[in-house]
Length: 99
Image (cartoon, rainbow, N blue to C red):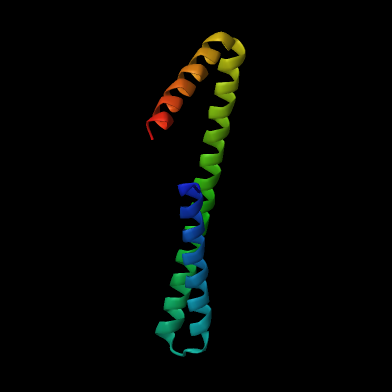
């Protein structure tokens, strides 16, 4: 099973590539309105790329922070962490055994 966030990122990247290809393909179309439309689309594509990079960076930073917090907790409280992990393992085992 693949990560839904990765799939969403890949889908959005594909849409952005397709939009860029469409803008580039229409480059030979004349007219002031077409040129203005292409410029507007290019601006929107660049803004979307920037937002995607920002969201990706933020998600990575939050994930790293959660990882460090978890590591700190386990170092400070090893036995409760082992108990929690064992409990989660038992629950997962029960759920898988029902199938």
